[in-house]
Length: 252
Image 1 (cartoon, rainbow, N blue to C red):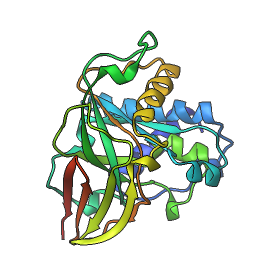
Image 2: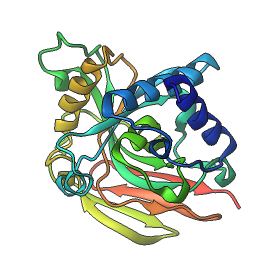
Image 3: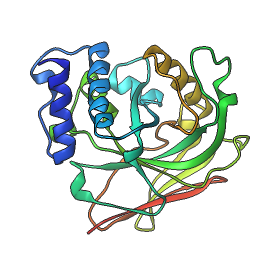
Image 4: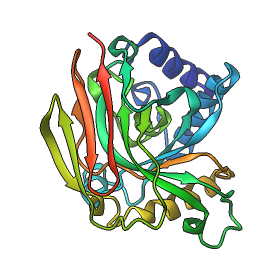
């Protein structure tokens, strides 16, 4: 399969909410090729009128990198159609097997590119956030190139109220609540030891793809806890000390 064909397979899977076999069952795929598929996949969305809205980072914990046998993060592209308002209602039927992760989001105030000396200085605000991940592969099973090609499993995201960027983020308590009960507990320190390191990583990884990070875009810094599967009729809330909350409800 060509890059365009693989992108089309994944695009159709996402739009129809039907799982497909892993790409690597059909052909060998290395990491650079996988990112080429990811770009072609997102280009299909842009061709339908969506706009780039930021990037997300994955494998931001040392344990996850060891589990996947990699030495670097992965990343994916966010579009405006993927963003949900705080308190939004999520249509479960639009996803294959969605899971939610608590995150921290950064709002870009000034353009970040390869000439930016300190990308952290370009950050305008910070907020509590969640990401809905939804691998389009059967059984939620994939290799590293498979997940990269699938836009690093990104499906949707929500952001809470923005706060000043000088908020201390090094060790914030973070809870993921499902129907009012704590499902996962963690700390912002689980995100690369400090979430601001994700800003540097995002700038570096985007630059390798020739992509500048534009004002108004969002950086999702990475998950602070394990992901939790979303079920019909449930309510999920991310609660972060200092930063506040953000929530979403899954439609019956």
